Image (cartoon, rainbow, N blue to C red; front, side):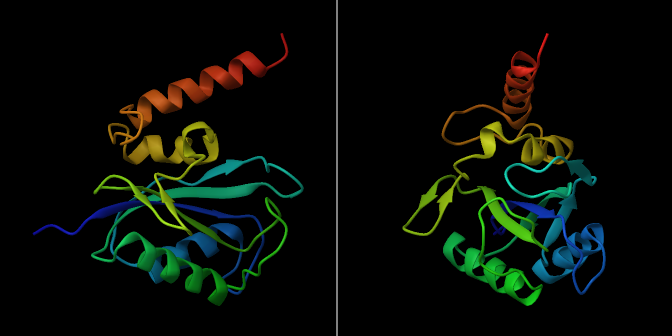
Length: 161
C-alpha cells in the first residue's frame, strides 16, 4: 500500500544555524524526510511587516502520519531551527505548512487541509506549479495549474494600468 502524499510549503527570509534562507530550506527538507520531489527555489516579496524577501519552495513528501501528527512534527522542526512564536507575516528562519494531502480534506481545531489560503498565494502556487500542476484541490476541483492561472489574473487586474 502506497503511503499518502503531502504538499509542504517551505519559506524562509532570515539566516539561521544552517546559513542563508536557501540553506535553511535545504536543511528543513532533510529534517522532514520522505521527500519525493522539490520545486525550484522562488524568491518572493514579503507580505505584511517583514522587510526581507522570502525564499520559497514546495515539496511533495510521503508519510504514513495522519495530518495532525505531521503538523506536530513540522512545528517541532520549526522550533529546532529557531522559529519562535511572534508576529504574523513577520520575518522567520523557517515556515513549514501542509498545503495538500493525497487523501483529500482534513479539519480539526489546529489544522485544515487543504490550507485555507493557498488558492490565492503566489508564493505557494508558483513553486507548486513546477512539481504538481495537475494536483486537484479537493474542495474546488481545480488543478494547481488552474488555481495559478486565476491567481495570476487577479495580480494582473490589481496592477496599475
